Structures are given as structure tokens and as C-alpha cells.
Length: 194
Image 1 (tube, rainbow, N blue to C red):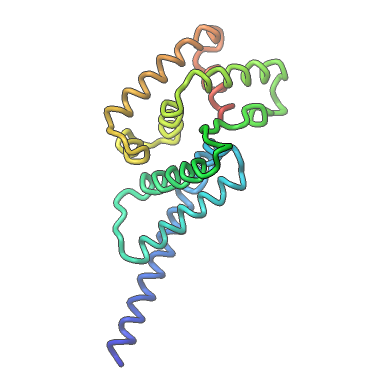
Image 2: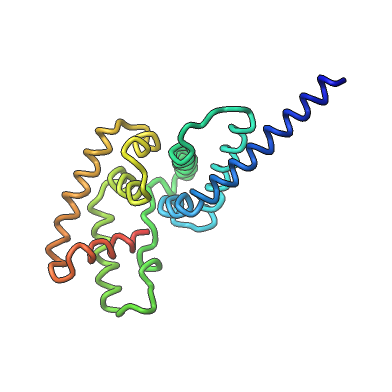
């Protein structure tokens, strides 16, 4: 009997540790993962469900003792794969969504003409970037390192660098449009993307 109660106590300790780790990871990475999921699916409810699923999987892995060396990269990787599987399962939504730029750009404090221009530029940028370039740029904007992005996308770090360099080259075309405001204009247009 003492062995059994010790095993139950150990199990309880592991479960509590997994709960604490999951809660801490959610506090730290939850908002960024939600933004990322929304950019892929373009729907807030689906994005929330997907993030919840990623954290559930994180909890289960930790509960069973799996060591996750880089929780942020692991969560992004699981979330991305989950969302891509969902998109593949629904033939009507096979293209990577790049968000509803019109809804995102609707900031009441800004001039409507500026918002229209930013929204148009955001659509042009979204169309100019390949899905992989867009995902790389989005993940880099969330602060992930090249190694973390490589892990999330299941590619090599060198490929991440190449994708970001191509995206940067494409974005340079839009800098002429914003000579007066500088890079800030491109950054604002990219914010319209998500």
C-alpha cells in the first residue's frame, strides 16, 4: 500500500507541475499564438480553438513527462501543423488566409484616406509574398529566432534566412511609395495584415 500512495502522490505532483507549466506558457505565449492562428485561419473563434488545442497537447506531453526544450517553438510548430491539417481537411479553405485587412485597418483615430491606402498596400504586400515568406515574416515579427522559425516550419535555418531575404526584397518595392514617412508606412501597412 505505501508504494501505491507514493505513486499517486508522484502522479499528482507531475500533474500539478504540468498545469503550472502550461499556465505559465499560456501567459507568456498565448496572445502571440492567437495572433498567429488568426492570421492563418482569419477567424477569431477557430484561432482560439486551435490555440486551446495546442496548449492541451502541451499539457498532455508535459503530463507524461516529455521534455520540451523550447516551449515557444514547440507550441508554434504544433499550432501550425494543427491549423494546416484543418485547412487541408476543408477543401474550400486550402489557401493560407492572410486576414481580413479591411477589418484590421479600421482604426477610428486615423484618416479614412490613409486607412484605405494602407489597406490597399497591405493587400498588395500580401499578394506579393508567398505563403512561406509571409509565415516567416509573421513569425519573425513575433520575435522567433531563425532556429525557432525553422523548427515551426520544418525547414532549415538557412531556408528561413533566404525566405526572409526574398520577403525583404519584395517589401523594398513599397518603400518608394513611402519616401515621406519612411519605413513607418510599410510597417503600418504590414500591421494591417495582422
